[in-house]
Image (cartoon, rainbow, N blue to C red; front, side, top):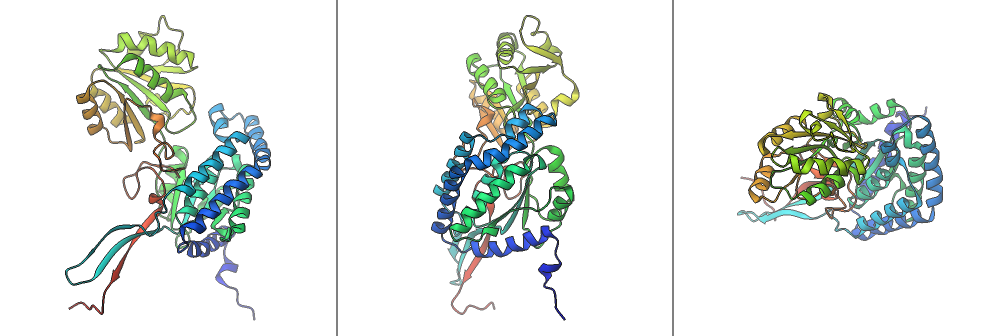
Length: 428
């Protein structure tokens, strides 16, 4: 009689997680050089096989256009040879970063002579559930490999061909460098059942990280029995204070909103102090019009739009909570800095808020009162990014307050353990 191993009776998703767990055990003790060599092999392979990746991506883009997907989402989905080269460059940047594994977070010799050290260790198996951004496939894999983790990638069906091609390239490169290819896997299946199985793979998967819209994130947070690091949507605000420099304010506003609209650190709401509104709003509305942005305005902003070329529509309650990911922005005039903070507290997703001001007192009060992962003073919201912060390619922007908050780089993909070294010590 043949006895089946537990693996044989598992679903395809759990089998993938089981293989990942084995790969994670192999990765954990590897020296930095072995991981870096694999990452450099990945970067080279991405460039060599770029045409294969772009061809697969073109099929996804064509399908998305047929389905009427917004241009902002199409932009997120699209891979070009230039973007593939940029992704490869990001992988090389990750290889150049310090390895967090083994770092001593704190340590001391206790009064009884025991040596105590708290050191960074990999999380283990990391599951990433994300929407139509195939660059996340590579970013997540690179960061997980560098931090000694195996990764299970579950992208959206809209990027299925792109992700399949990317993971094929990644696995070939990782395996060719002598690391287990199962350290990088695409979760089997395109339907929701595979996502549900991943959320229930407690014991095989150590943590899930969702990246995408509010609906996806809320579903994972509420239904997963695997621990979740919550990454939030980006309902980001730009507040123009009474003491703002007008040129600076216009430039920061347009960059925050229009430099790239389909990303989570793009501004979605403009708040303007009433004292500067007469001078600022006519210029801001014209600049937004030139950038092709539609303004969803409250009554006080509407009053300044009569002689503007801007496309202005009346704002509704829903506009204040909307992450547009498009050429749209909500706008309101507020009576004071404190009123701006109240608005932000009510509607923010906790991602990034910016103040434009020449007043140190106003900047200090704003940064003290606003409780988001990132508060920018006289800088665009677009800087909230792992690469811009010098962390290398990020795995997401965590809007929770436990373990990781803000752009998640390599240290955030580790946990810690205590190493207790004695010399025959026993507790009395």
